Length: 330
Image (cartoon, rainbow, N blue to C red; front, side, top):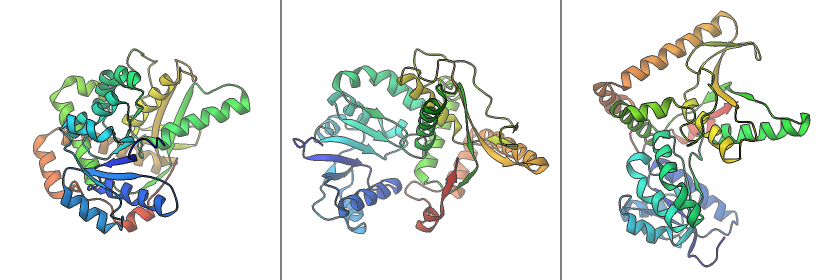
């Protein structure tokens, strides 16, 4: 870490549901002996103080104030650290000024974004400023898309090591997934749907597997929206909810690495539903459910009712017990 800066890391958005979990993890690292100089940042000092106290974070961890829309203040903030972690979403509404500041001053940036329309926009706008400043801008460092993106990297590395070549077609198959989502994740998903309804260009980006690889168009990719029997595992499969963001990130990684898996690389993700007729029925049910969900969320009154009565609110999320029992198998 650069010892000339006051902090190694600043967590922006520490008062949100996910921000608190990140703060708790950072404090655990420090308690275990990690020499990390970090600070929590946000716009509300009282809430920051409450989080610091509730998590048992010592008063020696500074609280820094900055508004998500105040880019000059955010520039001052990010110049004090080598790395910023942002948990403030939806990023398409609250993330512009912070990532802009990092790209311009040379501070590394990491977030949990699963909003490909916003990511595509930022890649177009900030690639050159970030290259010039030396900032590394890394999106999607959560469940979307770390296990899948790094999983493909690991797989291709091992295949090359053992057989001397890489795979031109990879399937990411989710066998088991148990867990929940936070209100912030729901808010980001709804914001993306609203943007897609309002702007055909956003809708096109959501459908485009190469939306995050400007200047490169790869081959036609496998259909991920239908029920499909997979001979390789002797099971039926249906659409996987994370595929629209994960597939884009995998193709971006291939492009950034110089296409080591080939310019004709194909990647798909699917949810396994079982064998025989029961597996087929589950897969078809998933297809119908996905279509119903898309149509319902495209209707503004339905979005309002879901947000008001059913979906978790920003700041809410799975309980500690639910998080402990959560797991997945790819």
